[in-house]
Image 1 (tube, rainbow, N blue to C red):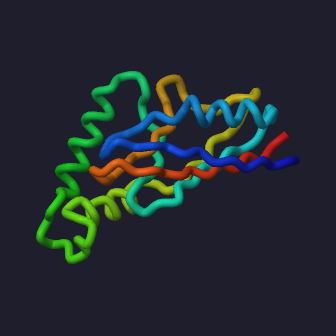
Image 2: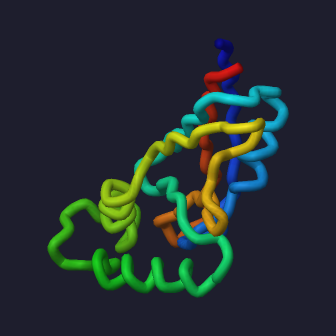
Image 3: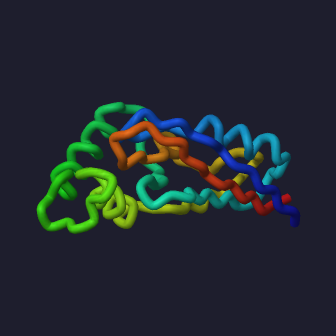
Length: 139
């Protein structure tokens, strides 16, 4: 067994889901591994990683509508508002989703389902530079 590490920089333009599947898949292909496990980890507390549907864009719209209802910006409950009304909601959204993913690698490819994609979910309204670490363990 061998391992490879890499990172992906994602420039976000504000709150939304960004499909990073192609870039992640390219790193898996470059690794040369036919079988293994990919771990993704985002180094931020106001963005997260998701596996979700990548076919119908309405799914992404509905995800954001749900989170807007669940964790509204500017809720008077929140004390931590140093960076604005979306600051604490971004941290809560991150805690409710995931900061890491584990995806099997089979036959040299990500073992995602037919309609699955890998997404970076930006929870802040301001543009940001996000870093995702990749660790592939395999052969």
